[in-house]
Amino acid sequence: MFAVMILVFVLGYIAIAMEHPFRIDKAAPALFIGSAMWAIYALGADSILSLGHSAAWNKFSLGLEGGLNSENIHSFFNYELVHHLGDTAEILFFLLGAMTIVEIVDRHRGFKVITDKIETTNKVKLLWILSILTFFMSAILDNLTTTIVMVALLRKLVDNQKTRWLYASMIVIAANAGGAWSPIGDVTTIMLWIGGQVTTEKIVFEVFLPSLICLCIPLLILSFTLKGEIERPTDQSMDKDDWGTSPRTQKAMLCIGVGGLLFVPVFKTVTHLPPYIGMLLSLSIVWAITEIIHKNHAPAVQNKLRPTSILKRVDSPTILFFLGILLAVSALQSAGHLALMSNALDKGFKDISGGIFIIDIIIGCLSSVVDNVPLVAGAMGMYPVEAADAVGYAANFVQNGPFWEFLAYTAGTGGSMLIIGSAAGVAAMGLEKIDFIWYLKNVSWLAAIGYLAGAAFFVTMCVSTL
Image (cartoon, rainbow, N blue to C red):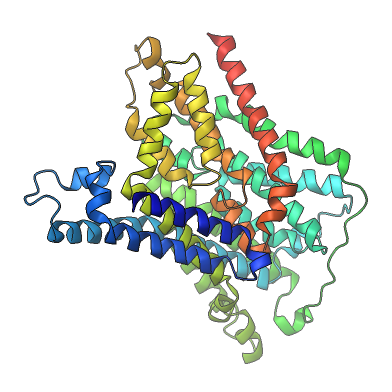
């Protein structure tokens, strides 16, 4: 059953990748593998847990009488499902809140304020503008929120679907690169920051340039291949007077929406509560303000611009896709597949010169297939933060040691190599219906070159300071 779980996971990923040839929305196979893997795990619990790979079971069963009996296993699965569903719900509610705020701003034509300022139609210039803007926005907000905002903005700037896919893909690469050098830019950097593995000043100083290189190399390559001008979409929306979206309202909703998103990292820093709480608080404020703005408008306007109507436009299949993928990965984590993989990496490369860099690079590559959060959590569990005066191999694991800083880079940017390898990629894939195979053919190699270039720069920088 342990091996069957991996087989189901692989087959599910193939079904997701073949979404367009099979003509089955990717949310369906994602939900299938998410639920089926937990079912297989539960049915084969005796054989799977007896292997000893599940750290979750080993911890849960400490001091527990009866061992692997049905009652203990039942209690264990109840606990695990609630635990992992809580982690999954944090991401889903965060995503739902961010998508709703962005949809409210978009429905009020707030992004028109920005798109009117971007006058260039040159493909290369526009690509650089959007990518650099995404790179720095991601460090302030986070890669998921930034991707949702920038894809909404992109729809107002680029009409051709394939061209928009390319731009959206570069937004994913830029968002992941931007999130890697900021302590609040990605879930994994937040984990390392809160866990004490890195500090704000050092992660910014050490990871900024590798992250910038990770973005700029693909941009430079595309600068030589992209030609011509982009075609902007025709504004087919109703007259602004009918919608109640005057220029003043557009600016107000843009400021309120972006302000609400910017409030989230501030809220987390001050309260130390999960980001989704701040996102839901921001949504409640944006929602209330929107209702107040339109309370005296005609019923027809209210029906179109009230958040209750706008919520119907939020892309629910993307949220269900997230749910399935996260449930599937949590099953692998709980059963011990990811821990087994982490231990194998440690044993294989620990005694090799520069082995810590190889481990981090592999973790980054794996994060394009498996969610980077459990991978980083596994690394944090394997290696304690060593004392500042540690020497030899242990010196790599002191606070702000090369292993942790490089892990922030690789886990943050490696997911760009596949469209389903990061939260930003999954969001863009859902919002723009990007084809997995198209991304694999046209963007994965660009992301891989940028990833390896940034990694090479980081390793060179570390070696030169020894």
